[in-house]
Image 1: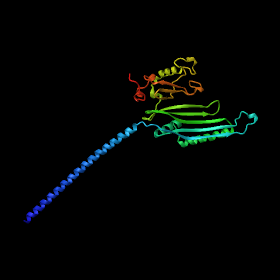
Image 2 (image 1 turned 90 degrees about the horizontal axis):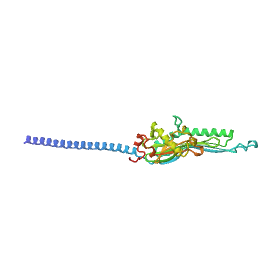
Image 3 (image 1 turned 120 degrees about the horizontal axis):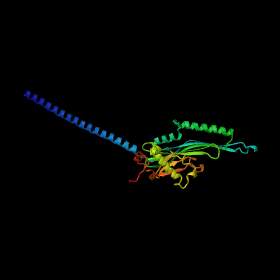
Image 4 (image 1 turned 45 degrees about the vertical axis):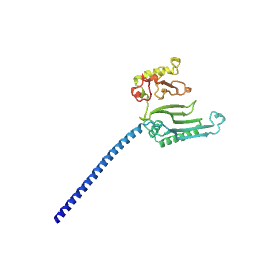
Length: 299
């Protein structure tokens, strides 16, 4: 009887141990399934995150701008009243030094505009260096005008936002300097920026060298108003006429901007010779067309 009791106890213990092992194994399997599920979900979340980052990187942001004045200082100097024999001397002189850029809602674009505004050769100065440079120039000009009275001295540089069309944004960098004489001299340089590639579109992004003679012929027709102005009556001769590399593009076409005196008198400002897209369709690089900056009609 005693032996039977011991056998039953042993069997009961073995049975209980077996049940516990099965329960533990079931829990392990359940945990493994949970780990596998969480790993798959984590992998999917990572993939979704990468997809979202790629989508966001390709989004075309709307540009908002505000003027960012880097340096601006002016002063009117009162000179001693000239003697009768010095009637040609001015009674006062004006000094103006200014430089400003644009602050946008896109960091890399702010950097690009600063570089284009301030670059001197391969050197791009810091904001502090520009301020020091302009302050030094202002002080030196003031001393010079006190020693030798003159009417005015002005130097000014700035950035303007022209507009945005989908992934293209156009800016201009203007300069104006007056050091005396009949008038000052200024100029405007245009930048058309691809907001997806962060690249400024240049003339050679639009046309191959082989296409430029045809572009030049179209520009000459525009300049002479399709022959209304005779070649011998133009401000610039046909031999000296060139394709300007100062360009910007919009929905109308490509604007070729010429500096003062290049193809017209100073009073005409900076002439804009515009060629429409329909005129240029067959002259544009295939790579440019593939970017879909312009929607051409299907033939």
